[in-house]
Image (cartoon, rainbow, N blue to C red; front, side, top):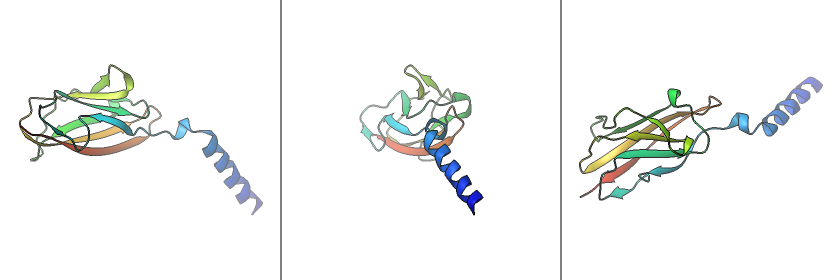
Length: 121
C-alpha cells in the first residue's frame, strides 16, 4: 500500500511540474474566423496555435460541400513563427467550406479539429 501511495505521489508531482511536457497545440485564432460569412473569398487559411507545431507531421486542408479539396496542398509555418500554420487556397466560389486540421506539437502531442466558413456574394 505504501508503494502505491509513493507511486501516485510521484506521478502527481511529475504531472504538476512538467507543464511544457504536457502541452498540446490548440487553435487560438483562425482567419477566416470559424463560423464566419465572408463577402470576399480568402486566399489562404491561417490558424494560430497555443504551442509550436511540427509542420512535417501536421496537416491543414480546405474542402467544399462535396469534399473536393480546394487548398494548394502547401501548408507551412506562417510569418509569425511555428505557432502559426498557413495554407494557400485556389479561387473559391460562393459556398460553405470546411477547414480540417491535424496538429502535432513540437513535443509530439497530437490534436485535431475542423471548422466551417462561408463565402456569400
